[in-house]
Length: 202
Image 1 (spheres, one colour):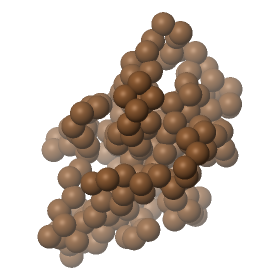
Image 2 (cartoon, rainbow, N blue to C red):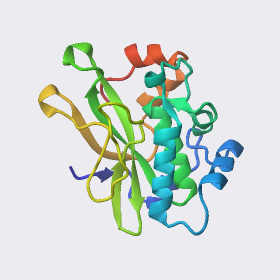
Image 3 (tube, helix red, strand yellow):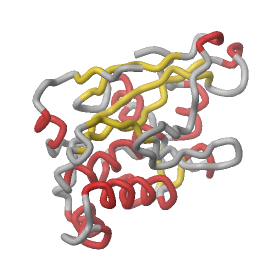
């Protein structure tokens, strides 16, 4: 699949926003802990990816009811669904001048189409040293899910099954999609939100 940038301006993918708030003191503290000047761009990208994947729990996996959205809150509470985790990863990477956007998949929510569909969020990052965009998914690994940081071959959390009406959206969005943000903003119980209120389409 060929990825398509929403914006032709690479610097648009570096902005500090309400949700991607890398200027927040809590996020700045973690930035100082994770990164140093001796690290390469690729090393920084992998460090940030592994931190969000492994050290921030997916709400559904831990049955965590707390709702998080902004990067600072997701970091503070160390939990969130994929929408929130992608916000945090974007914040960490953008702080290091690594252009980061948002990508989406339409997936079965559970194991059969009858149980419904959901929109899943992941990130795309531009590696200037490779002159290419790659997609990475810091959702969090568990049995049956083994997402990795990989430059040449995607190793995402999920592969879409088009025969079951799943879909990869090719767009790299500058900001989180409004549907994902409204979902996070309008629900305080993450488990109930995940089971019943995730958007099925962009």
